[in-house]
Image 1 (cartoon, helix red, strand yellow):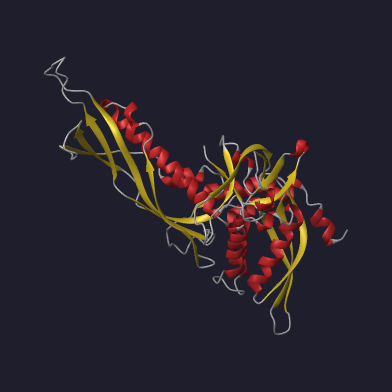
Image 2: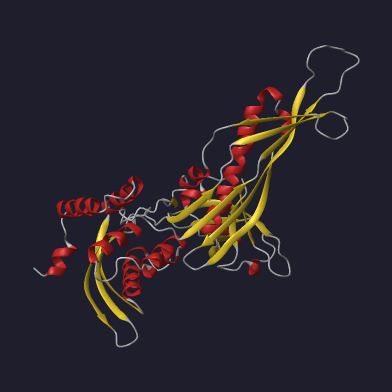
Length: 397
């Protein structure tokens, strides 16, 4: 029996042994990464592929890209998450060609969830223009397998509040100010719950040879949370010596966001946003803690959503007319993410002529996969303006 056929028909026992050895070699990998590897290995198959590039690393990345494409399709390897992980592999400078064991373990860590193992069959110079690499890769074929975008998160967190108290019909300036602190989920928790973002370790311990390198840096600068309350003016018809009713009257979370693609060296997002309190008058001063918690939760969810869709823009992949002449679009947003929202809109970012977001129509989620989702579009004035690769489907609630 040939070597090719033997590897193709690798037994489940051999695969289990292979995974055990792989995990042992990657002792420094975090538990979530090891879980990804075990899940990916559950459904995987060997595929041979070749790649070329100006360096051995780029040729290796190209070959791995080709192997993944054979299993998951050409569209899948164009996903931002997959592209970013392969780009990290291509540009890796540590280890060098003389330390193959270190380099292989590190490469598998960067592609956790996609490539379970690989074997380089041949590598050789291609004249003076670069290198050719031929390899065999054990690629995950799970329908929900995906590469995560690994980010470095720099966040000063939001843990304190300032209450400014105003008199109803008063002079317009606070007569009292109070301060307090609170504890809540870190913004990293919101990003991790998406299932598509991992937070890179910020330690610089070189002994962790398999630590994932971030492809993006996210910087979040929270401003102090300021909330306001209003004390009702005295009621002459019902005079009392007790405290007058006091209700929350406003508040907002101000934050500056910056998202950089550190591999490409470009800034994807650089903006300041303000998330206002919704219906603050429904909270009395006795429920100040609940008001602060509610506002911070909403703000962190919105910030996490803004970051997530900057990393993985939900662009339209194709459009078509369905039954009854109703337009449909397929967008780059997984079913898992899309099913968590109730309402969507179809539109596109502005241009130099009109910088604001331009809303085109409402959209209704009708189904999807681990990579994309389908939406039924509402009243669409001009379908020709829906550009594939430019327009986006954005959740609004």
